[in-house]
Image 1 (cartoon, rainbow, N blue to C red):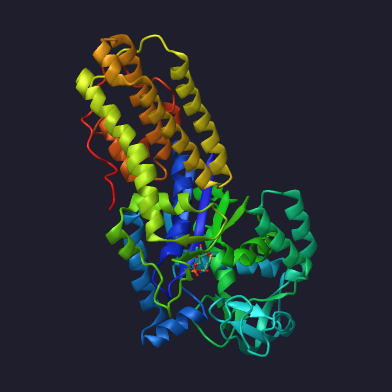
Image 2: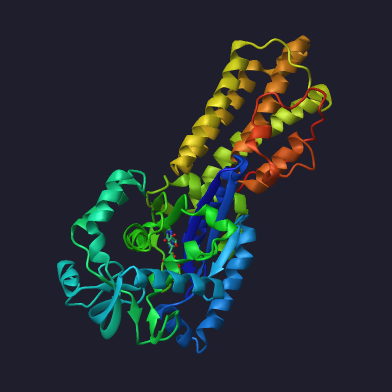
Length: 513
Ligand code: ME8
């Protein structure tokens, strides 16, 4: 079995989960499920980022200990993920001993390899982004006078403290060479160019410890310093596998894919690979930075109170509907706007009308004309072969689209087959065949419809595990479990045998008002 390792960012615990957090996690889940279907040995990691000044301040504002705040938010994530059918194999907390051991091992490696030295830091810091800025960077972005962060436009603070530094400047050329030699390393292309511009503008050594607060992993043998939260957080991708020990799970390193939002690209495509080079560890194969969601045209923010909370969304929509919509609506990589109207419209058109209708009418006709029993196929005509060819092409193309993280194209390709199925019904008019007593042709048409639906459901199952479970229960039988399916066993045309009894249709995609 081929290992496949996919990760999400580990989310800060200073805020409750919102639409953005579920987006990345759902995308990672679809890939994990698709790779399990392909027979790969999948490791899907998500978790939380508990340390840093921002979390400490959020806890202080609530008059509680940082760990208490973390525990509360962790509970929210842990109960949320099953509700969204997230099938993560592990959940890493940065306050755990296993993670701290990984961070310290990483620090010690960088130290032993001569990549860390002690100095004095004097410049600016943005707490919400946990990012350092030089005076020149602020000036160039017209942010110095207002003392605001060029990224998030919130206030930056001046830092003057003793600090450890990572020799990031030594990696400028090495990173440029690596990106040139590995064209798929950073995606999409526009983000790669952004990273290249950033590196070309010059890399300075990075301050990697702080002394003015205490919520974090202490620097080994110098406990007055806390390790910079990004060095701490990025190491999660290794600590979760058991690093530095040679565990069984370490076979998953290097990660196949770090899925992130575009906000944290620099950390994953510059700092993290440089750290790994310095630690003499292999680099992840790919970093994909997706776009940003706004809500009904506005940026989500705590102060505006318009952040979409998963609990509210789940009270309104089924989890599969959300999963489908988020990945269908916006090309992965582009920014998108969440609107309830477009969600309902997409659901009604593509799911209730197209998939739901094909399922209902096919199974209803199978019951009406054949008591739900799959008939023996007669001689195939051109249009039958065209349907099968379309399904086989879909299977190949969905694979390619998902390897490129083009979720919207994968869904669109499946939808094409669904529309083809509905056209096939219209062209063959099974009701006319029944009236004419053309039993052989009716048998063939009914079989092709049901078998197509089975293969459509299998392809859709990573996106909508609950709905496709229901579809497959009606088509196959009650004890099918989507999570246990493997393409190897189920993706071939014609595997449903004649004589098989299908269930009566019951609506899987009822129309939404
Ligand atoms: O940055 N649209 O955590 P975080 C799309 N702890 N995605 C969004 C989004 C939006 N409006 N808002 C958030 C951190 N996200 C660090 C990560 S990793 C080693 C450490 C998603 O809680 C998106 O994936 O601020 C983004 O990168 C992430 O949440 C930021 O989560």
